[in-house]
Image (tube, rainbow, N blue to C red; front, side, top):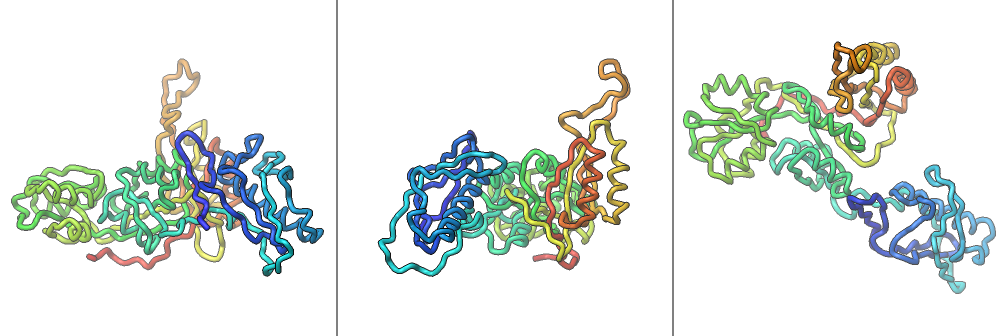
Length: 426
């Protein structure tokens, strides 16, 4: 039986089964149901998203099961005109699922089958294959290594831009995305903070990856003949002092990613250019390592977040971290009150980041038409060490909500508790 594979285009969010699907052995009376047509259409606007469709199918299976338990008479099986009155995601409606009963002709009954659940009807994340994980860059990038650490044996999908990785998950091209948000030396990756707010994906985990930079060039090239060094801006900043100590009189140019810089040199046979990238990138693109471990500090770690279409259920049996973003119409004066909500409950903050409020970057003091004093407006991103399953975290956010005009939980997820060690070569 072929699994239901949802499809989504840019003009519609309706998710439909790709082919007619047979629900088999729903109850002890061996009633089987199939769809009449190739798509599920619910009246009154229900079924316009994946959650509605799944909820409706779960209601269907539960009704069939309850009918069998109540009467044991196969005459109670749903007919073509049977309507299920259900509240699906807040919509009160009558749903015609257009089902055809198939009689069993008194054949021996199979063992009892439990009703289908939303889990049974949901498309499996792997779709019958490896988990597909999107990352920014090309093979050999540190993001690819982070994806492999977060999801071993996954199918890594390279994306040329951060936003493409977000879109790959939203459009079901990938099941997860693994993207960097901060580095211990270079600081925050601001682009991804902005994209977290723009898109509706959820943080479901984090992974911390030690970064070990190498200076790569074509075979036979010597350091003194180099005219420029190219790499990702974060990598250039992380190796700034070491490049100076090496005595390299070179131009430093930023490109989209580290492994992409190595690929560019190999593809264009650039003998006056070196790249800052990983040892794996040197192996993949046939480059030699001119200098190993050139990061300014051996304690060079990048933190990545794992993104999915659906959030995970918070737990309390292991350390969790929660990420939120908030803003206030009256400026940044509310920040102290927000921080006190966490301090009062002894909740530790691991990060706070401010980004410009793009919809309202400047606020005029006094009258909006004649005011002369201007204040910059910001969105605040906060990570704190607590699970949303904990009462203290729930109470803290309830208090934060009183002080803010906008509050969104980006995710509550397990912390990466991997023992830390300085970066080293592969």
